[in-house]
Length: 341
Image (cartoon, rainbow, N blue to C red):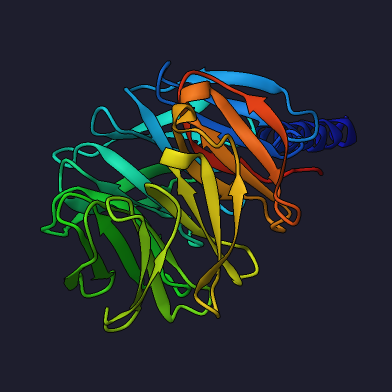
């Protein structure tokens, strides 16, 4: 009898552990392309193996915009630009499990994920950046958690997009209405801002962390700054109305999304010159905005907000190989990595 009781206890404990582990373990899935649909207040999950939208989930707020994904894929942060909140979704289970109130920091826009599991976002209505830090407590499985919000004012108008240094100690913002770029020390919270140009919108940091590149949509150019001093180093003419700029995964190219002519400018980082122009739609009517590389840089995804499509480009050839469908006015893009046991 004693042996049977011990066996029953062991089996029960094993079942409990199994259930807890099953609750935590993500379901196996391919790569998902996430799209923030401003027009219908949802995000789309698109299977990149098939190109099909497999889920569409509502956000809690209005006008979901930029999206950031933690390195594990567990957390997906979606800004609600029309209000003052950020939603957290499970990248694996595709459901929203938390909404973080940003208080006075309204109109969140650009957002990046840090390797420590935190997120940093800009808030246009608050002229600030906000940091979202996850804290775990308790002994439950899965663990209880809370998210701490702290803000750093930029004192610049229209703090729009954000990028971080490779060591994640410095943030850089493009401040659209002020026409400036800011350097924010995330440890001391010191902020330095310099002029960049009319309606500076996009921002990116080179892979070595030495330079900051900003796209100036009102002047059809890219401006390069020294990352430490914000000394102005160079200017490069690009396509019409460059809204976004991103760096390729190998660090050799910068790419701008040019809304008014429906093109992408590919810039050689070392030579500091446009090496080619990729025609996406060739039209302003598609209202081309956000850019995203896949992990190995072979594919470039381009949000055509006015057409409710995401163009998929073979980066080596520059050929548009297809268009993916999501929701209304899809803009912000991110990828949840594939997961298997």
